[in-house]
Length: 100
Image: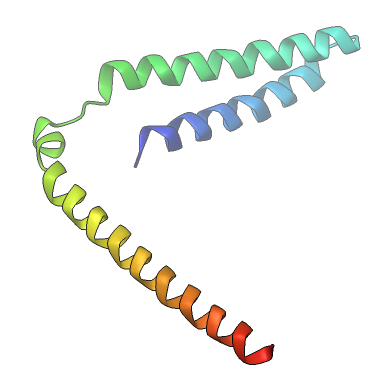
């Protein structure tokens, strides 16, 4: 699972735990919002700290990306798109000529 998924999950979990804690403990609207924000922020910071220490990226994954091959493929696709665009432009211009 990607690290963004962990952050989102723990932030939402912290929000709902903060919501339930705020409903039980708060006496005013300000306390409600303060408790909710503090608990949610705690969970947000906590999961980032956990990810910093325990979530590592293997160097083999980083080295497996072939930049030159990807650039070659992207350039080929761009050329094909330009060719198709010119064909579409010629077809639309011939249709406009047939209408007039």
